[in-house]
Amino acid sequence: MKIEIRAHSDNWKREFEEERLVLQDIFQDEIRVIEHIGSTSVPQLRAKPVIDIFLAVSNLRGMSYYKNKLKKFNYRYSRTDMANRHLFSKYTAEEVWTHNLHILPYDENFYLRNELLFRDYLRNNPEYVFKYSVLKEQLAIINYQTIEDYTKLKSQFIQSVVDRALIEKGIQKRVPLLDPINRST
Image (cartoon, rainbow, N blue to C red):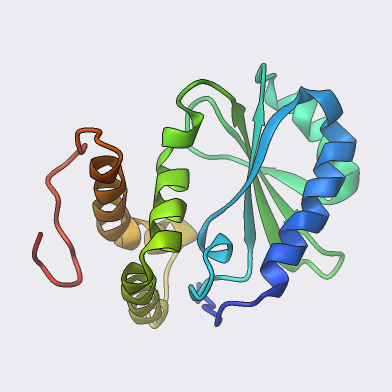
């Protein structure tokens, strides 16, 4: 599997906003928060052209409930090992993967989720946007068996950024702080 990394597109924000309206229409008052996450949510960051979305709900229901609500909108359920979350991927009629929708429960620690900490830290620290873009370009050269194989190779960098974000918020980091690009703290 070849990973396609593209230069940041201003269209990604628009595509998120358009999908947000669709999701608001589908789920209405069940929604607590809809957030644009992932690399397409960070200005200037190179990314796979797939919009990642967090849809936080008051009460998380079973997968089949969401599957029924989303099937006519070209979303397909994707199995993951992530607990307490449902993942759906959206495809065009031509089978082009366009969106990932993560449906998860909203709670008081929602904005301390790794994905949001990572996004916000990158948005405020352009030097890490550059470092992450370089890493992604290097990893995109490799041919992978699965998308998870590619994602695993980014995990050390991602965790180091999440740790920095936690420290910035005055919260104890989760693992030893290491910058995998510079190999220093």
